[in-house]
Length: 328
Image 1 (spheres, helix red, strand yellow):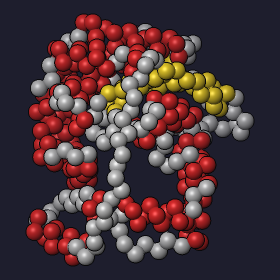
Image 2: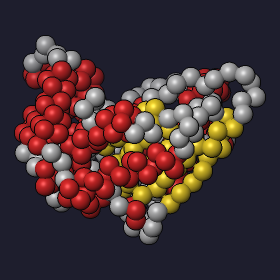
Image 3: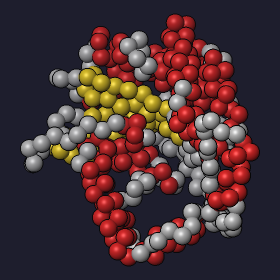
Image 4: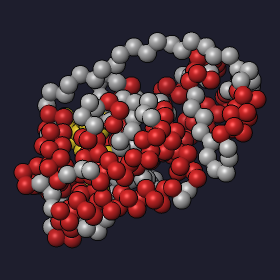
């Protein structure tokens, strides 16, 4: 937080490292390119439209002075969440925090101007051409985060909805799209509760051999429409709730995940005590609530669809697999 030695030689070296990281994680990965283009299309005003690592041109034209200004502006104790987990006592942690951070003065942070995302006015579609063997489909709907939505139960219902669609072997996508209809070789749904800006409900997948992205999109839409019209079954709801409870228990077995959850809740402005209420919130979700959020949020006016149009490889090798949850 202080005394970082920012010098020209070190900056030039790390700048090249970051450019290479971008090449490896994004420019050599067709699915990552689709995700990046979808984010740039979905959001118009919010900074989420820009990749965290930056566009290649941003990195290439970054200067040492840019880095110094960023470091001096944001790396201050009043802009930090410090999380300590393990076999410790609050008094001991407080004493160490005072010892190592207490002498660092706070500084006024730049004013954060409103960056309200304008309402989307109809479905958006983009096609990304990149070297790949198979096509790929990515769909994203605007959806609220936990701390930004005045209706407290809706984000929890969206979390359950994602589990109904994609929550293991018994999920809608696994049963209907992969095994029964055989329209997808893989398909998943994801929704994150926590974030500071606008959120997304995301579905992505790869068509099965002989099927197109249009076939896969239609099948996905069919499952969502069925939930919106007819709701979810009691056994589906209980299965997802059991999975969330088990996941929560397993996370508490890990000191790292305990710390991560506390940090996530704190940095988005939620009470850290809410970490203890995750299971209760999920358990309280009803089938009617899951149906309602499907009807309200998974609609075309809030949807962006990005598809990968595979192009021939020129270097005769395949790009390594990438985890879309990492990007999200």
